[in-house]
Image (cartoon, helix red, strand yellow):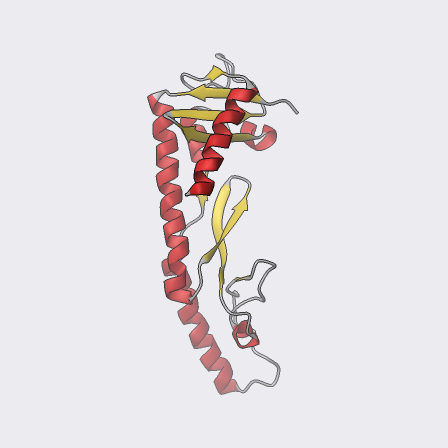
Length: 186
């Protein structure tokens, strides 16, 4: 698979990435705030270009199994769609479980951040998200410019990002390393 590297400092591209960064920061803030509601932070889940919360990191106690699925390999538990009481549970206990589950579901719907998608960013940049989905694409901001690694070539008469100039892989990788180093030291 081919890789094409680009760099742009066009205002629309910078605005699109700034909007994504703000949206992602708000998503992460709300995801982390789930610990105030449920006792643990929300899981950062990814599917294609979407980010969503799939569960919370709470105790793996079997007592919670009525309302929460068993923890995944990272310790996150997802809220069940309906209660799952043990066999032999009394009718009164089942009713209490159901009421508690409705309360938990309402809290989840109120506090869980909505799914966000990078598709909007790609559209704002001027790229068809389907091309990114099929061929791949990565972007990041560094020193006032947007760096892109795409699995397809930009063309004036087709996929096009305003102000994007093709760069060599070494320039992209140098900027990428600097960004990663900054994140690791932060």
